[in-house]
Image (cartoon, rainbow, N blue to C red; front, side):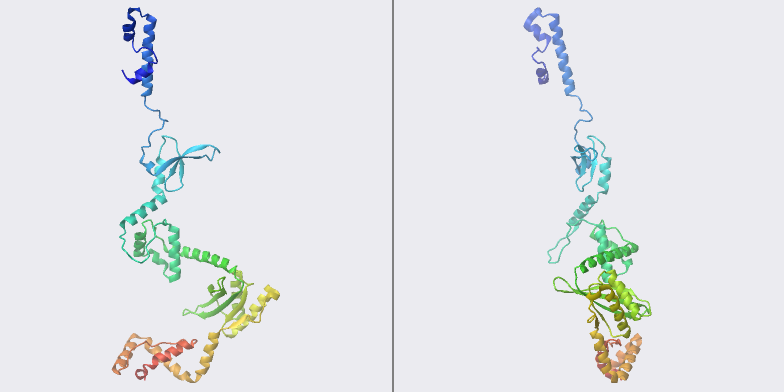
Length: 403
């Protein structure tokens, strides 16, 4: 007889046979019935104890998804003060309502799209495949989780800084490179990166605006020029000293300026620029070249700032003339006697540089005359005296071949 039967007899004799052995034939019918009923009760209790657990009883979590989730009791949002059972992701902060013994389909769907889990697996794959060698060069830090938004911003900054084409992000080997760096990289289209570049521009502009709020005085420099496509541009640059007493230079505007480039047109464009940046009360001086239209622009600006700032505006040192332009005028004035020679040399250099066959013939002539071929012929820019000096200095070594 088992221990269970012994424990559940509860002081009664275990069978009618034993009672008969002890008491003989003196046992009554009532006693026999009582012993039989106690045996039946013991067997019923034994069945209940060995019965299969109910559906809502705690059972082992056999689903594989529980490797990536854990159970926890969290405060209920619908019933404040009450704790409810939640299934929580081990890789992110996602949590899902769960009943003991319930379905795990929702958990499996989340696991398939969990970004933190994918980043973890990608990082493990990269670390497993990399071959590390001893080197003093910096290595990649894989502790930072992959973020497509950060990568897109960095690519946009790279394109802006190095003046790459937007189409570069669609090049086959660029995408192969990025995929090898991180398998989670998603290809970017040229239109998307174009939009991202504009967003980077606006973000950086807001950062610069916040920096300029802490600056007391700002000096501006500006100039106009016409491109090879006969498009006129104007650039405005701000110069200021930061809190560490270091000179800082920032481009505020690079805009197309339609003709005519009169003083009022230049003044209006400058004033619109400074009001957009909200620094009209901080402008200390403006530096321009000595063109007559710039004199008119300065006069118009003085009138605008005087109305805006009143007695706080000091116009005495507001207009600063460009020293480099003044020096160029001095040199051109001094070399006026050499104008015929300089013009002739300029036309000669143009003649050779326009045709590869002419350049080759010039080099052959130098070799036949024993003239050492060194630096190439240099064509000057009329408004830069240093380039004219370089043209004369370079051509002087080829004097024999040129004559």
